[in-house]
Length: 273
Image 1: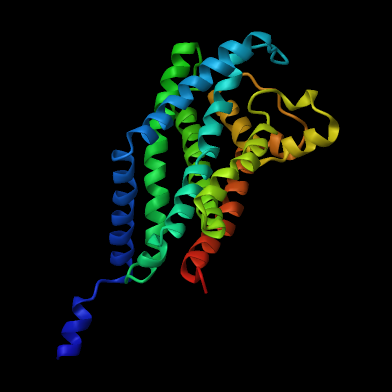
Image 2: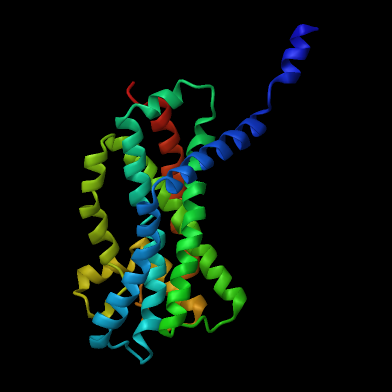
């Protein structure tokens, strides 16, 4: 009888996953609340990006086939916000490892998947705010979503999906690195990866070998898909991801998520062993 009562009192796997996910989300969001500088940087960087790239560099840029450069640029900046999700999660995961937080969390009876999922979903909520702010700044700078609300929402959904994938990649890298300082220095690796894309300039003017890398870069697929759905000027290459940007973005996201998600959970569970 007591065994039956004990079994009935235990939460189900799903209930435990949901509860641990919510708790983990709250922990990360409270970190933003107590770190106003981090939140200000997240909100302020997009504004600076529009000013620097749109008005300073943009005066010397020509879009192949015509069109306003700032409209060409905005989908690239949206994609950069999605891509940059890799850095704060990587540094945060490495910091938790270095300070022993990961070991303490792992010793508790909580869901490993729920813990990491909560962290990535919290970052996703913050990125919604950042993307919304960037869109408002873009509208003030002359950018428009010209294919209607449905296509615009699909574009933002793809951007958030890619951000979600990047946070899992950041979590995996942070757990693997294990040191906050080292994780911060890895930005020198992420930065070139983000630059060798079609986000700021068309890939047509790049050397042949570099253009192949840029056209097959997953970030370029996200940028091209956003341009296509927003109805903004574009200069797609001839590579398959550029000609089929939306399916390519979904395919890249699925592959990266299936690779990074399980590996991150496994790395969290086996860290230090």
